[in-house]
Length: 153
Image 1 (cartoon, rainbow, N blue to C red):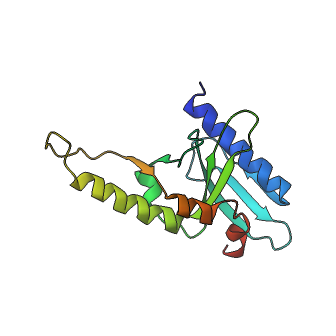
Image 2 (cartoon, rainbow, N blue to C red):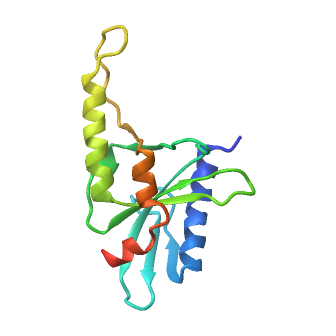
């Protein structure tokens, strides 16, 4: 069983490898310092994007990613690459989202979750944890769309 830290590290390195293979210049930031895990630049246009990487081991079903309250913030230059890691011999799936797509979704979903009482009727307690659960259609729209980051940067 892979730990969450190892899964996160694997996701970041998969993203770095994909960006390099696509011809972008990319580097990893210090672990856990900011919302930014990877900084990438288009060599031709010098457009630079900040990337938050989230990885999940949910494979073979519609995946979800664990996030936090800080991910509700929208930043013009922040992108998310959501990585769905499968087995050792499988390439992961990559889903590219702008923070303006993730932040409001998390905020609305969390508000709804808080408004629905537990099965025993008690109110839910607020936490910083969030879970991003896109539909299969949303995922397909965002799958492998790396160029989107640099077109809109």
